[in-house]
Length: 279
Image (cartoon, rainbow, N blue to C red; front, top):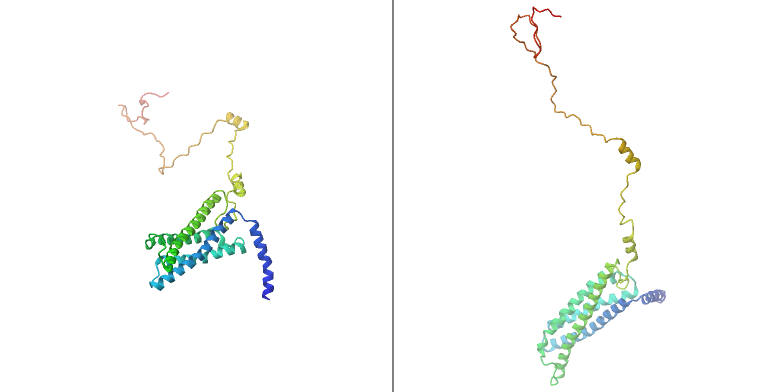
């Protein structure tokens, strides 16, 4: 039964590996070289740091800080780089191979290797003149391992830094050209080509519509406006709440020196004497 399952899964793995190999770009090769060298050198670092820490604890009863950090950096690199290398071949477009996942992982390992390189450099005072020929075998081995750990730390740190810087630059270039670069695998997007979908959206008239041309007045409107004068707006009376009062002329009696039988008249009209006959 296990052999049957393995024989059924083997063609699937072969197809996936064949498709991955056909679609490999220079970014894929660059990624494999960096991760592969870092993975192999992590094994070497683990062996050297482990042997050096064992020698140090046997003769001095203590393990130095750079030795412990070298072991930690090597172990974390083996744990972090193994899935990135294996899953990239077995499954295309896996989430673990996305740039948004790979770059933080590589950056985390880069910090460890950088700290290891700086810390080991500070211990060169143990052998300021290098590994001399007069040293015994144990001391000479210890001295060689110290400088080997220092060199390996700088080499791995430079490789990881080159990968991070390269991927960040091409991701920014791809993003500026309209590609999705963060939630995809490192070798999937075409970083240096224009995205045709993004270009079609930019050139679409539905997105950027041309301004409407001003409408010219027709001849009928011009003739109608010349025949009929513009109507003045009718002003509505303003209501103040006070009732208007009708005007009534004031009646007054004038003293003319005649008899009291004079008739009342309006102001400004001449009075007629009583003894004069009216016509």
